[in-house]
Amino acid sequence: MPRSLSNPTVAAQPKPAVKQKDRDPVAAGVRDASFNRSASFNYFLTDRFEAGVALRGTEVKSIREGKANLKDAYGLLKDGEAFLLNAHIGPFSHGNAMNHDSLRTRKLLMHRGEIRRLEAATKQKGFTLIPVRLYFKNGRVKCELALAKGKQDWDKRETERRREADKEAKAAVARAQRR
Image 1 (tube, rainbow, N blue to C red):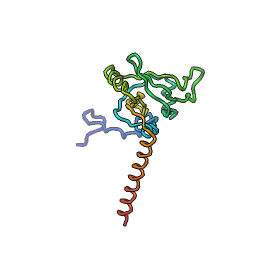
Image 2: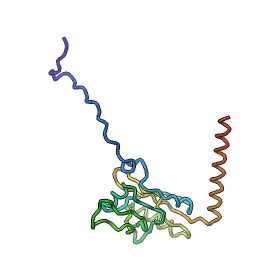
Image 3: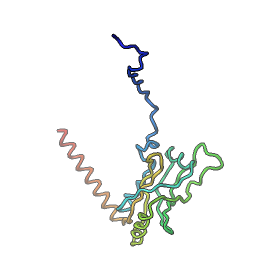
Image 4: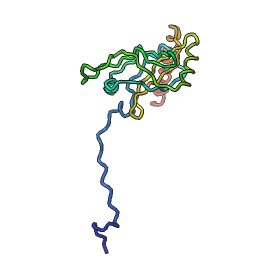
């Protein structure tokens, strides 16, 4: 005897999944909101740390639009707190008179132990904090900081030579595989 659809013992078939609108890759955390390309060229990057950033609402929306730039930014430790200086976050396109200042100093949210470790490391001659990238993680803006030591001009040339040699080697391998 066939079961009727009105019978509560029959399991209801699940509705087909409705495809949701694809989320912006930056907002979803798939792609970085901002990346500091000059950091690895100008500095030797050693340890990396993740820090939250205390932002205003219009700043978060601007970062989602891709208006963040970390090129001249650096980190500063003062009185047991960490700050992000010179990070440019452009004004929000739909902002009003209450829009944020694009170059304001922003507080970095880190554990006290990490800050103490960074203070000890930056006291060494030549070390500084450089923001490498801004990204979203679980809907919150995070900043990846790197402990960095500045490169001399000859270091930069050596890095460029090594990069060119690697590129030529990969090209030679690819040519050999095509034959």
